Length: 334
Image 1 (cartoon, rainbow, N blue to C red):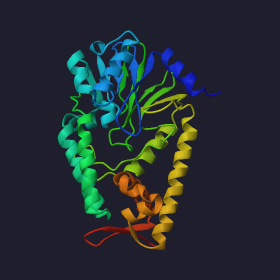
Image 2: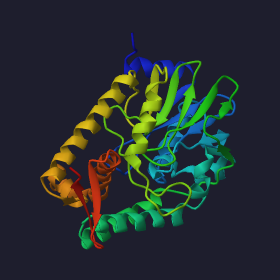
Image 3: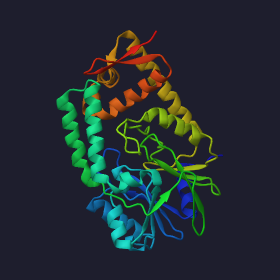
Image 4: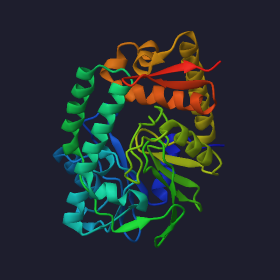
């Protein structure tokens, strides 16, 4: 019988894994960071770069008899700003090592320049998929205003996919699970059947597979949803009893959750196919047909969702991209 989420948290705490709920300025709400009371004393993810987040991190560490100065290792699960924004401050105070998937080390070290490149990719992608220029550039301005919540990270301990990290009381295996972001990494405690998954899996919301540049620095976009589905299928096969997420409550039946998410993406793919079969459409027109006005206020998010599903359809040979030199439209092949 699976534990309840509350029991799962207590089980994790008994194993020396403590959830720290750090505030963010974003709609997703608080981010879950995890303190490993082990040797070395380790923090998994940091929260965003803000005074409020720093104060709460200090306070919640203090409740457990620690301070930022005591931290010896920071592990970063992925490149998003709500998960790494305080890393520079923590390292400056503590001298902690920073571990992350090695493939992301260069991007993390060049956070500012990398964020600008991502913004340029997003603007170009939005315009090529029919989003009006004024909307695309307005959203670029919003994205730039968020850059201050992030920070560069000098990775001193680059991790290979599958590498084992040995602590006094446990071993964690780093497993690269890209999709939500190109750098998503989960950490597997096989002995306790606990998976620290960050945003790879979240109980109450579907993790958005955002279109991003690959970690190799090339300008080609990723097939984010295709990659994410492959990653979820790998995680589905793991004998995890508890999945500790980057937001919300622990997951106690990851197989059922992943099956639900895969079914949801299958339904959405078929809905988008019917829209395309009825008439060729741009990505923006598809987003408007599915989400209405949300397609304007969350244009890049909804476009990422649409393109993720058209990637699936193109890979299946049911849809093709038609580029007229200005915008891309999707049409059925049958």
